[in-house]
Amino acid sequence: MPWVVVTGSSAYNEGFVLLLLAVAIGVAMDPTRGPARRGLICGVLIGAACGAKPTAFFMAGLPVGVLLVWHAPVRRWGAMLAGGCAAGVVMLAPWLVRNALEGGNPVFPYMTGLLGSAHWSGAEVARWSLGHHESAGAVERVGLLLGAQRGVLHPQWALFPLLATASGIVAVLSARTRATAWPLAVAMGVQVLCWLTVGHLQSRFLLAMVAPGVLLVALALDALRARSERVALGAGVLSASALALASVRGFLAENAGAPNAALIGGVAAITGAALAEPVPGLTPEAQREQWGIGGELPPVAFVNLALPGARVYLLGDSTPLYFAAPVRYHTTWDRSPLGDALDRHGGELGAALADLRGTGVTHVLVDLDEVERLTRDGWYDPRVTQDIARRIVEREGVLVRAWTGSGGPRALGSYLIELGATPPGSGR
Image (cartoon, rainbow, N blue to C red; front, side):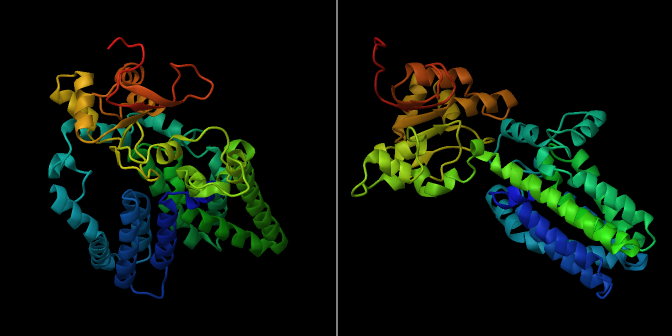
């Protein structure tokens, strides 16, 4: 399925959650193990899943809890669930203990009103909450669920939601599969309710439904097989082929029809390491072509190759991984070092930048696109506005390089500014 391929091949944590959830579902429904043992094993699995993605508590833990109580006598529920919860807490203990020691709140950044906000101010808590909670009403949330942008009609889902729903109906109506299908269908319903009520409603966050959904598809095929093996085989092949085709089509459309172009040079092309040393017999242009580096160097490669002794402040961007030079940055929700400097100097930008220079910063890489997007969404430090970012680009320091595509001097893009120098023609 496209979403599984996308998240499984990228730096996302959904794949790990899906793996542990699938195993936990199998354990929860296994009649050969006693309830207490099933609870402990599921607790370990769900605790590990929450370590990868905390919202797995809702999207994996609650549906597995439904399956556990469904397949155990009522008198065993207490011990089974208590053991499972204890095992889950043990699995999460390293994260909980570290958070408690560092900031006093073991579940930071959650429950800040009750357990404290650690190093965050109220403004930072508010920004994080805004970015992780949905303000839409109940009817609007259902509309988002059924929408193409943030719900089950997103192209990356392809036909899976329709397939899982139809399969669930078939499996529940069939006497052959009903006993197994009902709890899985209820578990999926719990996942949908959790998605509607917790978090900020993104299509990808529904991915946990794949685990019970695939089982419902398998049960529906088994129900069909009881009537006609040929029909069941045909339906299975057709469904799998359609999902595979959707994945292939999505892949081929990536990167303007060249999905593997970035793999030619890989990390060495991103960092500029591929061009750090000349290759005998190749011109610089041919060397770039060999590594799949077209046009001008991207910002990271330029900084690494042209400014090896610089210390760069990232304004807007918060991805320092590929920079060889030391960088200063902050995450989306955290206080900005530039914002703190502005506070110390009464909002005077020149003095604030001089403050940053005093900490060793030599250049500022301004990503106007990110500053504009994050400011518009209310996720960025409000002290660092789009206007301030523009002033840094146009009036402070010297422009070293601009990456604006085909836009003019006021186009959005990235700008590398050297601090401590007077812009040409500024009169200063």
